[in-house]
Amino acid sequence: TGAHEVITTIMLNLIAMRLVDYLLRNPPVQKPGRADPISQSVLPSAELPKLLDWIDPNLRVHAGIILVIAAVFFVYWLLFRTTRGFEFRAAGSNPEAARYAGMKSGMIIVMVMATAGALAGLAGANQVLGVLGRASPGFSGGAGFDAIAVALLGRSHPVGVLLAGLLFGALQAGGREMQVEAGVSIDLISIIQALVIVFMAAPTLVRATIPWVFRREAGR
Image 1 (tube, rainbow, N blue to C red):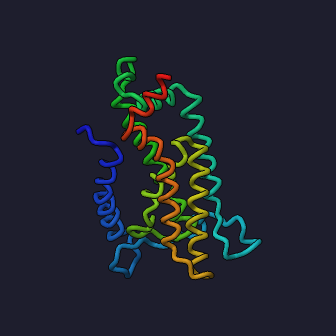
Image 2: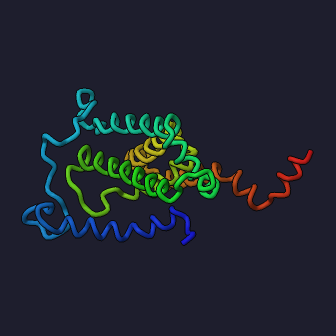
Image 3: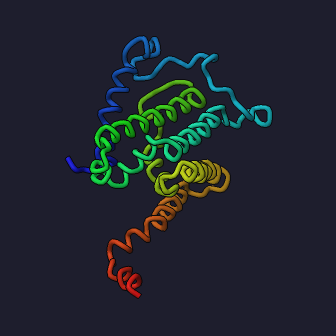
């Protein structure tokens, strides 16, 4: 259709949510005795172990963080150390040029989307197995939209995304604590996140709105 993949996948969110809702309302996924869409509780043997409960039982840091770091290294290796990763980056930067170079851009895009979906599923599994203990519609709490901002801040680089994710996670966790302890509105954290995104996108926006300034600087 020519539409950006971010827009099309956001439009598919409702379909995915309804599919999850359907699965959670049917056995053997649905919790027995419940009419609302909610899964059975995760078995203790399937829960991700807590890593810092010996320091404070209230700390919810679990083994999922190890999986995240492993995923970051895997994606870095895939993108920058393999031929397939080069094809991914080439097709993402310029699909037409990649096609002229003999790459199957359509198939590459499908593979990239499948890989991204697998990583998103890993993130959801971390949340269910490590924090919530069960699945329900909307359990992600808008994490997908936050991920767009994290990817922008991390410049779409695996290591940058990891650092940006830690920053956003610290802001959100700190915001909830500040709201409870100091009465600071959690909306302030949303404003800070928005300002970070604006400052990161500002050079591109300025270059797009007043391109003659950059052309004049380049001609000197």
